[in-house]
Length: 189
Ligand SMILES: [Zn+2]
Image (cartoon, rainbow, N blue to C red; front, side, top):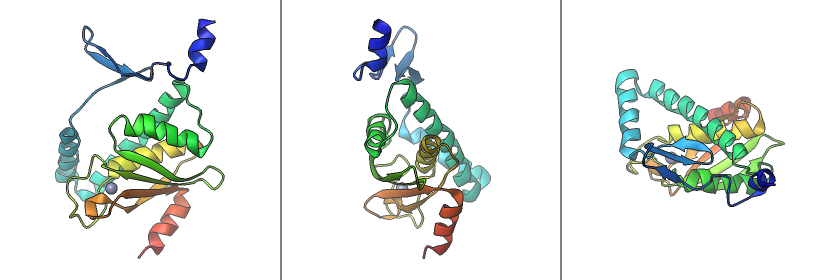
C-alpha cells in the first residue's frame, strides 16, 4: 500500500528540497543537487571563452547543457511527473526549471508530432547585461534542447531567436529537428 501511495502521490515523491547537514547533502526529486553561485557559471563561461575562443566555448556550454537537460527529464520521470501534454511539460518547466532558479520559463509551443517546441524565459543565468550583439544563453538553451529531445525521443537542435542579453524583453528558443533548425538558421535575417 505504501508503495502505491508513493507512486501516485503528487505532493510527495521527494520533490521538496531536503538538506542533510550531517551528510553535507541537498536532495530533491530523488537526486542530489547543489546550490552554486550564478557567478560560478559566469566564471566557467569566461574560462571556456578565454581558453578556446567564443565558438568552441558556445558549443561546450550548449553540449554540456544538453546532457543536463536529459538528466532533468530522467528526474521528472522518477519523481512521477506525467510527460505527455504541453501542460505537463509546463508543469515540469515550472518545477524543475523556474523553482530551481534557472529563470521564469514559459512553454509557448510544444508539438511532439512535428517535433517542434518554442520556449520562452526571463532572468536566465547567463544574462549579465543587455548590451550584447548576440544571444548569450548557450548553457540554458542546451538544457532546454536536451530536455525536449529526451521527451521527443530524438536528437534536437535549437536557436535562440530572442535574448535579454542583447536587449530583447525575453529569451526564446526554437527547438526542433536538426534539419529544420539549420534551415531556420540559414533563412533568418
Ligand atoms: Zn538569452
